[in-house]
Image (cartoon, rainbow, N blue to C red; front, side, top):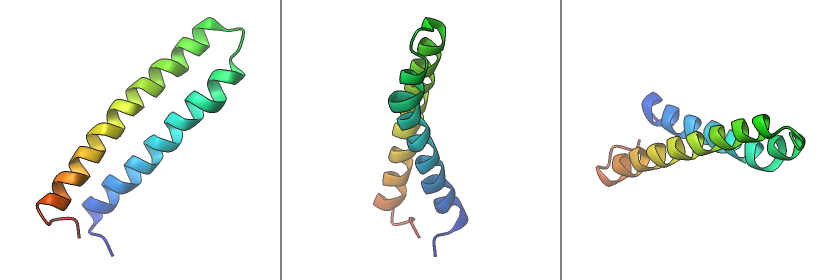
Length: 69
């Protein structure tokens, strides 16, 4: 079993990844005809993609330091 802080990193990564996918693949399409909403979904996806990279880097750091347990 993962320690709580490592589980939290993996869980947050999964949640952000799911959200970014929905924004890009579903919500953006559903907002067709509303430029404001489309821009909102694009910005949220961009923000979550930045968070995804931060989370991936932190997980990798834990693995490299042999603290991913």
